[in-house]
Image (cartoon, rainbow, N blue to C red):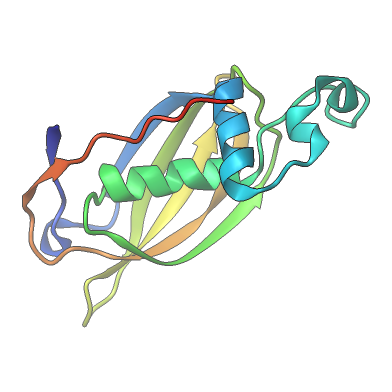
Length: 157
């Protein structure tokens, strides 16, 4: 197991930010389809997708949202962070092979509760905005080192 230290609400300031980078694989898209039950052929069927407006397989729009969730829950603010709301705008398709950079920035801090609003953007390897929105999260009151459990492993059958 690895460990990480989360960010306490009291340590956050307007303008604090962080980012993560992830390269999307076809396996990511297939696993998302399996876990969500969304088997739209534009995500899974190369023959179908090549005749679509996108000209090929694309990731589910919510896949960008999953990467934002990953950032918030594991990195910044980190473990113990709880989603209260999320808006997302899907600006461009995400394809297997794209390298995405998720950026989050604190844009508001609630005065009487440990609640933060973060601007979220997802940019591809061509510096193209693919997703943006805002997250409102309940931030841990205390910073602590957290042991992160290993991710489950799945095999496609």
